[in-house]
Length: 250
Image (tube, rainbow, N blue to C red; front, side, top):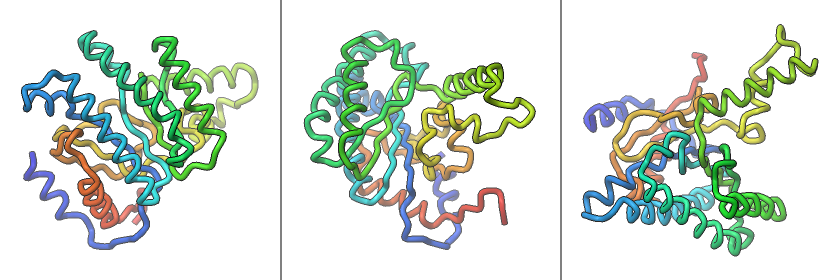
């Protein structure tokens, strides 16, 4: 599998650009395997992954990337052991409590994409407070945390909203467009991702930004998320800048 990825990288066109992507999306994968390799509980892997998230968000800001979207917890992750889910939610609470104190200073704003209704009242209030505070200052990067998120679920929700608009006479079903659909997505106010990164050696998108990533560039790396650092991101950004994006054209 690693050989296939190496060959794929070599086939990237040589045309380069100094312009970084406007929107990077990352599937934060490999926390559990990182912990297992070290004889640690999976919860330790999630704690290490949370620190990596902090570093990479700051590095994206420093590199002039205005949007970062990370896959933190999917609609399918509820199938995991209850202890692991509880640990993830506690880590998120801890991060948000710290972020609320520092967001304006760090010039990082936070948004949450997904259905927050199943979360605890405390965590849901923290998410809402974080988003409210993010609107009160000028940030250099918007970090979108996909929490209880699934790409298919997002598309279904948008389709239902469009169907209601048609029933109410706000939309003409015979002239229904992609723009009408996109208005009801969580990402309606930001550009689609230019680059989607998946660490951990897995080569799949796992129900992540299915609509938005139609023309995104993908990069798969064997590095587990807790070991993913600024240097790895820089290498990926360099590879991205060497790709020629045609968007279906010549």
